[in-house]
Image 1 (cartoon, rainbow, N blue to C red):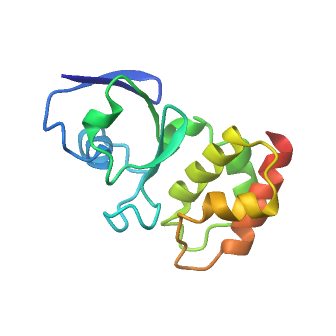
Image 2 (image 1 turned 120 degrees about the horizontal axis):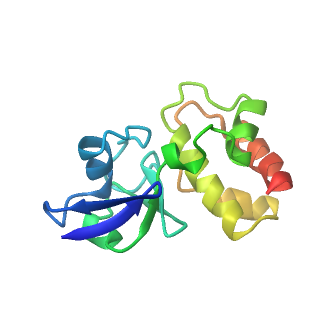
Length: 150
């Protein structure tokens, strides 16, 4: 049995320990904010936090989260008012929106680790997330704004 907390709720998983965390969260728990993009940890759409660290849940086995605290976009802030989420709205970041939960989770982890990142650190910290709509300048601006609040 695999035990973890997901968005503050204790969960126990009795299935295949190699199942990707993304599928457990989406299919078993019905938390569909984290998206499937590439399945190879290249796009970042599936980003969640495991013990505060941004991970690509499409390639993270459920067993790797055993004993951990997992946060999905739904658990970042129940009202959608995390500083990163507020900055995203202020800068009108989303276009199609598909990648945005992963972008937000990566930005939140970056700012949790480094609340005053340089421009280069923002670019490096967000580099694992792809936005097919090309809203990178708005993403960068939103991360910079959120850093002022964290």
